[in-house]
Image (cartoon, rainbow, N blue to C red):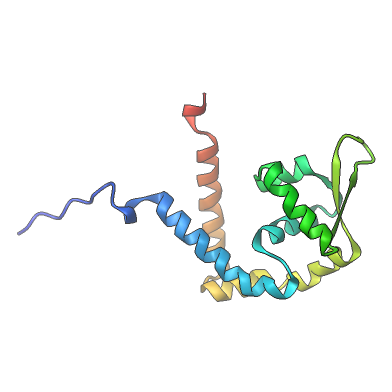
Length: 153
C-alpha cells in the first residue's frame, strides 16, 4: 500500500486567491453579453444595482462604501453613466459639500429590463437558487473574515 501523496500547499490550484480570481474573471465575462443590450459594463451594472436598490440619490461617499470601491475608481463610472443618460450628478440638497448621484427616468426605467438578469445568469452559470444562496453566504463570510484581518490592528 502506498502512502497518499502530500498536497503541495503552494500549488496554484490550492490557493483560495487563485480560485477566486479565475472565478471572478469568468463570471464577469459571462455577464458581458447579458449587459451589452443595456449598454452597461459590469462595474456600471453594480452602480445601477446600488441606485435601484436605494431608489434615492446617494453621495459618492455612500456609493463608494456600498460598492467597496475607491471614489477615484467610482467617479469615472458615474461620469460614463451620466453621459449615457442613466444618472445625474449634482450637489446634495442636505449637504452642498456632497456630490449626489441620482437616477434619471431612463435609468430608473432600465431596472425593468434588468430584472431578468439574475435568473438569466443563474441559468448561464448552471446554478439554482440554493447554489446562489450558499455562494452568497460563503462569500459574505469570506469578505467579513478578510475585513476582520488581525494584522490591521
